[in-house]
Amino acid sequence: MTRAANVIITPTESVRRELSERLGVNPSKIFAVPEAPRACFQPLAFAATEDARRRLNVGANFVLAVGTIEPRKNLSTLVRAFAEVVRHSPRTDLQLVIAGHKGWLSDALFAELKGSGVESRVVCTGYVSDEDLRALYSSCRLFVYPSIYEGFGLPPLEAMACGAPVVASRIPSLSETTGGAARLFDPQNVDELARIIIELTQDEQPRAQLTSAGRRHAAQFSWERTAKMTLEVYEEALKKAKGKRVKGR
Image (tube, rainbow, N blue to C red; front, side):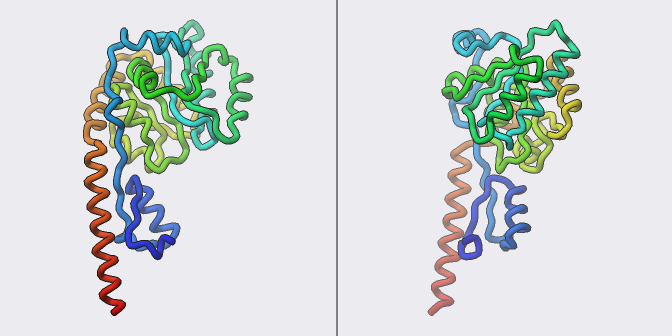
């Protein structure tokens, strides 16, 4: 199928390279077209988030993770790191909030939570509306995205657009998507993630720097730009299709 296609669209350059290397597709027919945060994801004043947080049982001091609960999202590493943070600062009122519905093999994460010693500090909201998600992005102390594989990684950009300081896995797609505006970590290194959470939840300056950098970076993405780039790829596909018909005569 990939060899028969005139053009192929991927969400990142890293996936473009991966597709070419693993499937042997000519890179000249693969085009990277980035996604973008929806327009609804804009900063919300902290006071305006109170209603959503109250309904979701979320306090004023929390670390947020967003995504389907499944092994690829690597939430067990975040739970272990959060447990280390609490052991380091047992008097903290910090919560871990995981927003997302249950996916495949999600039972493993809930088993991990039960043995973590911090289960009472972890809130699993399930799926939330865009309005509530905006409130969580806008009011979290820190947004953490520990995924071990992504094609693009939209939640970090959504979080940046709402002013959240972002911490993300140091994997090719997320390094590309976050563009130097997030703190990156080894997704298999619990201690590294714990140290970063402790630093950023306790020090306002680097957190503010991430917020500023993230908002500037997220502003570079738009669905209008995505649509324009996609149209250009379709036009290229039509040119190639016409070229094939001419050669076939």
